[in-house]
Image (cartoon, rainbow, N blue to C red; front, side, top):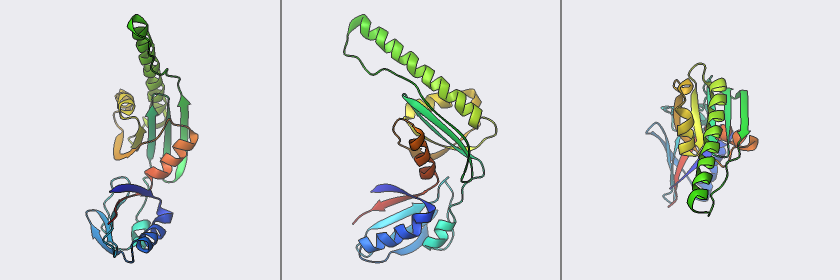
Length: 203
């Protein structure tokens, strides 16, 4: 089984392509808060709306796509040791964003005290990177309690979210496995956060 993220404007075409690839169909039913489709060859998919929204409309690709509605206040937080990206949005409109990079040294093969000094320096650099990410996340997301989609490195995100200024955030279940955040990575992450999540099982 694999998971794909399908934007609202492409969902109907995606369902049609799924049918073409798998011998016709698919028969659709509303099931488990989304829509379930089965093609002629037995391949299936289950599509869910973003932001943990439950779908209870008709088993129809057009109706499902129209049900993809973005919150009026939401955000994206991406953190890795090498950088961070934060964005706040109102529906599809980008309100503000910040992308930052921090140099964190890689591992060393040196041993003994040199290795220990290197590890301490590396940990300090990572901590400074996380503090910078938390500062900008607090500035962009801390007022109010927007729903936030996170991604990057789990441990790094968890570290940033321990900042008390971010305790009111509602963290979405969706996780975005992104590389070191850059502007282009953030832009794609925003699109992925707003897309339908489709689990596909090929026969």
